[in-house]
Image 1 (cartoon, one colour):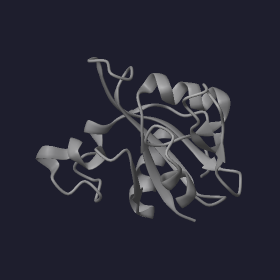
Image 2 (spheres, one colour; image 1 turned 135 degrees about the vertical axis):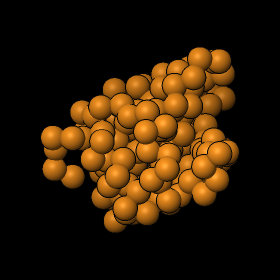
Image 3 (cartoon, helix red, strand yellow; image 1 turned 30 degrees about the vertical axis):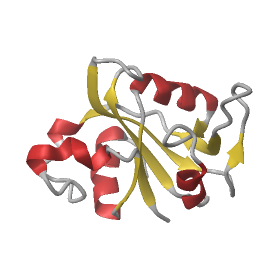
Length: 141
């Protein structure tokens, strides 16, 4: 089992949670292929809306991959993103500032935003559980 962070606006994360799917880096195949059934995903949202200026800076969703392969969907004739099916947990959003000093995958604590610039990253188990315990305070993980 592995642990990943996807980066998307809060608005886009909510669409994925409602639809039971995850997509990364504007629907690219590469990140979706890296996931295996049983892997965990936490979404980080820097912004409220895609292209918007209102900051969010929270971990906004957490779930587990339930399919065995990426699938391509047709949103429009020109946009066909790759997705994974995810069972999301009912979770509390958590501000990243409360965890910055403790997260080992954030190397530069004073310039932490750059960590998320590629939109998808694998994290270690201890970092996953640190975030997950805050997002799911009364649930078993």
